[in-house]
Length: 484
Image 1 (cartoon, rainbow, N blue to C red):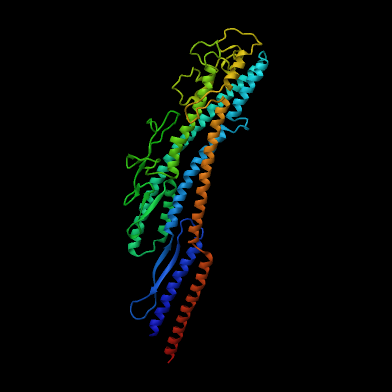
Image 2 (tube, helix red, strand yellow):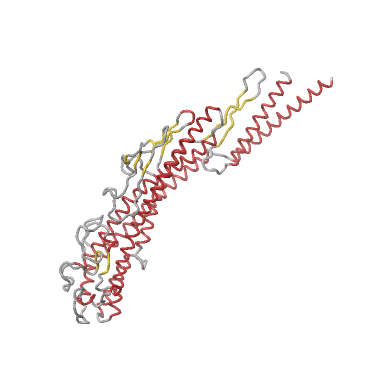
């Protein structure tokens, strides 16, 4: 071997070890960077000519594709569960629990107690006033819960629109990175950084809708939802959604009042066994808007109807004319069967007993249709109202059991159903979180290990020093030749 060959080999060693040190430094610098895949330099003997040396073959990016795919599925499940849990947690806080003075159950109990107090001294204006105030508080509670449900639907509607925009943008970004990776791959450049960027974006997409990566030529990837929808092949799929400006209780997807998700102009399902876009945050938002919130509103309306009908029952207040509303009204009018949807939001105290509307609190004792004051000590109507509250009646619709119960009993069933659904969603969050955490740990286990990288750096340092020493020896030998 000539001195020139020795010099060339030492220089190639210095170059390779310099590149290896750069790779190690990149690994250590990105120890906690999301989406970063550990790099490793791949070396081979330089077979060109007879001088030997070392050649940098490529920079290999390590990422466990199987664990990554499972982690993305867990991310989608987590986003789905958290969205549902947040809705029921917020709804339960508005409905309240019995021990909360502002809860629906507590307000109904307070109204019943106020009627009992008024019945014990029906001539006392302060007791009649307290009963009227408690009745108004019951109507207000129904209004607030209904308003919250529709507010949550409106919020979900806005989030769906934003999520669709994010999904379209992210798919376009993945397509652009695919093109860059393919070009760099064909030119023989390192594509690891571009693959890191693409992984972060695909992770973002997986939270919106769970996806699988399909490897393509020269580093490209396609994206397919777990439901079978092709999101990205050579070009990205375009998603559309028309946001409603305002949502009220009777607006539904089935009724045509709300928009479905469209994929390349065609409606696509987000729930059900054959849904192509199931799972993830987007499906959970549609589920909230079209299922959870609609079901909760339906149960609340059924409870409101039961309340109205108890006080609108024939024979309860003989002073009322046929067709006139009872103590609780549908926007001031008598409730008409078949107009249940949204009743909780329209529930009002009868203006005839509401002093804020010019009513007379004495009509709570004398009758809503009374034209003159009755006997001050007559508690007949007040006791009849209390009996109407405790009367065991059935609610055959909206998920109630159909068994007879008092108004408080039905209210307890409604509150319990909300609490049970919240617990179910929280259990889903807990399970999804545990699975996500385990998969994150597995992914990190195959990622950058600072101890291993430091050991690798020591080896690189020794190899670099050895090649540098070779240069020094070759230089000394050449100097000796020149001195002859």
